[in-house]
Structure formats: structure tokens, C-alpha cells
Image 1 (tube, helix red, strand yellow):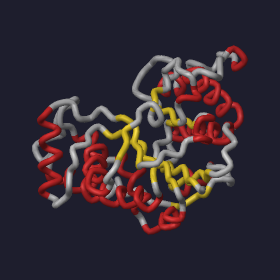
Image 2 (cartoon, rainbow, N blue to C red):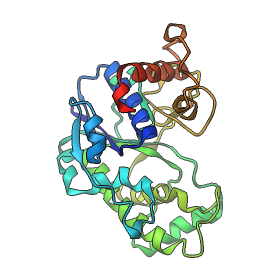
Image 3 (cartoon, rainbow, N blue to C red):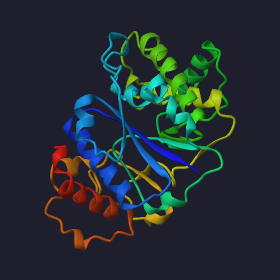
Length: 282
């Protein structure tokens, strides 16, 4: 079994801090079957440790047709020819930089394509629009909604989903928001990659599992880390908050006072450890 953890990185202070946490968690759990693969700009990759697989990738979000929609970069890098080598992995985890792995990762091998739990379909109008777009593009929608941003599955299948996600996202950005960006929590351009990813998964994946306990689990929880292989920093100011972390609000907390068996303290411990051991990221 060979697995890959895949992220995209630009040389922006908040992204580099987040990556430091993810990398530190990756090293902390001492996985023996997982490579960390980092796609990124040349400046970002200079700061990435050499035990990662580093792949130079020019983000597409700065092209006019993408309208500065930067979330697409973490998906489009897997759709590019430079990521063909990922087809040789049994399992690929495509995720964001503001995440952590826990020791539970070392025993997490789901049988089916798995995503975290999302929250971008909040009314019937959004649901109807997604079905209409899929039908317009000749794609099958199986009725699975609110798939999280992190995807975990067979390498070639994850990449196929990413390729379709990019195609659908381009269509949505350029055809579905002509009159404006919409408004959250309804139909909203800011979550285009989530919409397009859902459409792609429904078309290509016959059996998808949405498991918010295993993927994209919130970093502010007091739950046992051994129940949650993958942690995501949701938008909160409760501990552990990426916003409070980036602002330095946790810098005076003693690492020895933290309980590493619970999610929020584990994330904070890893975050403090990352700042201590990887100051060059800033």
C-alpha cells in the first residue's frame, strides 16, 4: 500500500504557517506508507522541507477566465500533466493546507472513495441549480450533496474527479454568476470549487462515502484524536483556531500543559511545535 498526501502552496504568510502545522503533524505520526506531495510556486517550494516531493506548479487562478478564484489551484494541480505520477499511488488524499493528520491516519484505509462533510448546499434552490448544471454539461448527478473539500481515494480516480472539477468550475464561474456573486448561504460564487467538485464526484464515483468524523473534522473539538485521522480548521475563533494561531494568540501557552489525546489540544501542540521548529516558513 502506497499513499500520497497532496497539497498546493503559495508563498503567503498564512498559507506557510498552515503548511507548517500539516507538515509537523505528518512527521509527528511517523507514517511509513505515505508521501507528502507539495505542488507550489518556486518561492513556496524553496521553504518546503526536502523530504517532501516538491512539484513546481504555476497557479491558474491569476488567468482572467478564473477571476482570481484561488481555491481552484489546490484542485487544478492534480488535473495537470505534472501530477501524472500520482496515478501510481493506491490512495491519494487531496486536502488543504490548514489541516492536520493524527495518529489515526496510520490505520485509515477506507474501502470506498471518501470525502469530508461540507455545508454549501443549504436550500433547494442551490440543489436544483447543481442538478441543472450537471444535466446541461451531460454529467450524471446521483443526488449526493455537501461533500467536503478533502477527498480520499484511488489515485487515478481522485485525479479524474479533479480534472472534471476544473472543467465544471470554469463553466460555473463564467456562466452562472453573470449578474453578481450571489449571496451566502445560498447560491454563492465563493464556493464554486465545492459545487463543481460535487458534480464531478457524482458523475465519476459510483460509491462515495461522506464521513465527517474521519475527514475534515473540526479543530475546535474536544474529542479523542484516535477517532479522527484528519482535522480541518473551520472558521472559528474557538481553540484551535487558525486565525488566533496566525495572530499569535497562543504563543505563550505551555506545550506541557496540553492534552495530546484530544483534538483541540493536539492541534495547538502541533502548531506551537511547528513555529518552534520551522521559523523559516515565516
